[in-house]
Image (tube, rainbow, N blue to C red; front, side):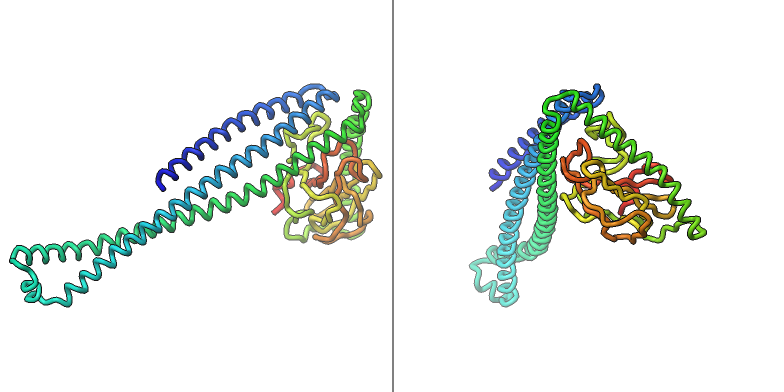
Length: 376
């Protein structure tokens, strides 16, 4: 069995080397993407970025699968070690049982009987010495048994950790595969839209930029006007009564972070939000109670909902495919306010969307801030 463990160790080392090789390839494609993002926006450039992102996504999957293989080997190794410890424990138990039998026999036989049962004084002394050694061996056997049991307990804890690690890797793999499908869909959609025309691609870029600039301008303007309106109506500023923000869709994979350097359209505008993966048509909940400042249905353009809260906070929910609330309406935390979207070519998605997700902004006094600093 030790030979089998050595063989598994060799396989684990091979997987680690394979991981290092994949990581180097991932870094090459990451650097290539960053380089292309710094270059002037063009159709060929964007397709190159998408192609590199596809390859990197495939490498990400290969990386996770390799890590899963390594973890499975680690689990196999720990199981063998547990089996070895079980055998050692059983062997020590048998040894201890034999020692106890001898002790029992010693206690039942008188010194006179031992003398009579031995042919000479030398035999008698040897017998006594052996029984003394047996007595001393009990303590050693108990210590050994305790040590083996502690080692077994540690091995089982390691195994539990490895199993948890494997489950996490399985979830990560599923997410990576979803990302890959999203990248493929994004590239296909862009190609279908522009049909190889640089002019058409530039028109879409300009449209996407205009949509975002218009939304940003409206949000900043509404931030001030709605708060002033609420203060005039109530005679006081809007109070923030909720216990922090909640996730507007179930907490899930973040596909783009706040001011993400890897955001595919960063050369058009800085990403002022986090993108949370959500199936098309998922229910969006108000992250906190407040007044709906904007519920814009832009048809096939960029649709979004903006809610004003107390303490200078507001939230924006972008690429929505359905809107359940109206402007000036008061909503409570957790209330369904719309449906998520983002799938290319669908209502509310806007130009050059990257796949189904919720674009979620948090603003403080009208200025975008990192939502992750406010979410639980």
